[in-house]
Length: 377
Image (cartoon, rainbow, N blue to C red):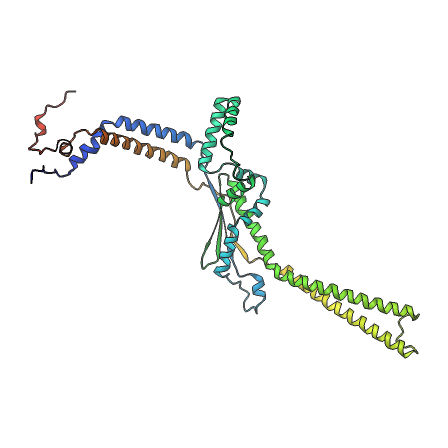
């Protein structure tokens, strides 16, 4: 002891054991009870949880075909798309607008799957509610539901379609691998078939939009050509009508090449020449229009499938075992925490450090343990 202060004993394994292990050993029955109770609850709740299945489609993105056709092709091998183009495609697939387009073509089975509570917490709540419904009876359940409906309205903040869109965007994720132009579409669902449907429909809508984007430049040229063709056709019809009207005016029969009146002959030749030129122009525009249509039809997707979405064999993880393990270790932590908290609040004296904290008196010595008689059993 220095300056009248008691010497603080060193912390050793015996002190730690008496401070923490001894109270746990004394109240092990309480800890086991809490663990058993927590595990029982977790086991019961896990029966309402459904396994989640994952279906994934993988594609590679190439340079757009209309970009390739606009250049001199040096090779027949398709070129990988630039990173900026791939990222733009990924962001488009993640957008709400694209999800809305997919939602419009989803079959009823997939829409019902989106409407159901598929997240883990909602599954458990729905399972508990259904169990209470079966236990309490339909009449009592409807009364309880009527009372609770005044306080909570699940559709108060959004429409049903908005909820479906959110669920769809949560279930389907899109990712890309930089520098290789690979895009993966991953769909999750508690239903195996719905997971495949979601991934497949995303791919189908993307393929259709991609083809439409590739054709839009060619279609613009085709629309412009069709306009010129229509104008040339109208000019040809007008020139032909003028020639016919002139012949009828002067009662010129058939198609004579030479007549006695020079003025009439000159006018007739001019009308005939204008009609021939208009006809030739129309034929040229008609040929260009056909070529443009063939070019539009030959435009292809620049998205190539690597792995199509397939039916998953096993779930993503065993969610029921995860819930049970959470209940087991959670109950253990709660039991140990309660015992140690009680030990801290009660403040029993178990070692030299507890004596110093309580009486602030120096310890002169200690009796050996073999002086105490063994407890009778």
